[in-house]
Amino acid sequence: MRITMIKKQILALSNSLKVKFKNAIGKKDVFDFKENYCNENETIVEIIKSDLKQYFKSPILDVGAGIGDIAFKALADTKVVMIDVNNISRHDYPCRPQHQRKKCDFYDFASKEKIKTYPSEQVHL
Image (cartoon, rainbow, N blue to C red; front, side, top):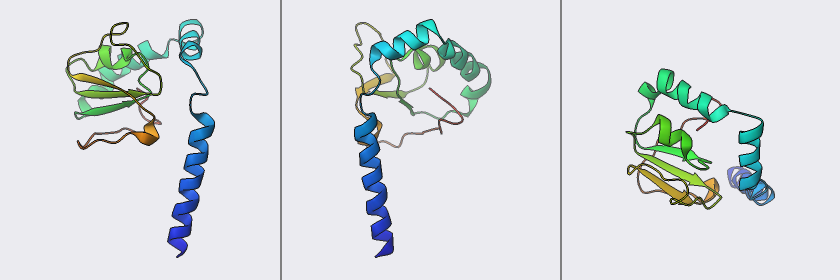
């Protein structure tokens, strides 16, 4: 009974956070931040290419992929599933043939295929 209560409390908290943060940050906010204040994506690309790529196993889940530039540049020959809450046009931001783009929230993502994930504390894609 206690385990069931804890699961329900965690689920309620998760759903509460999901509603609170869903679409709180828009595409323009992210673009402005990355263009004007931070060059993190290029740094991440270089770190993946030089130090981390050998440890990645395909397929990879790129959560919050945005325009997909990190996967495009650093994981060109790797199968990647890129998810983002924003609708990113393949026409405006092309992706590699082995990359798949999905518009969905991380909390709603489901896949029949086993996908490797890496803790964001270690790797931010």
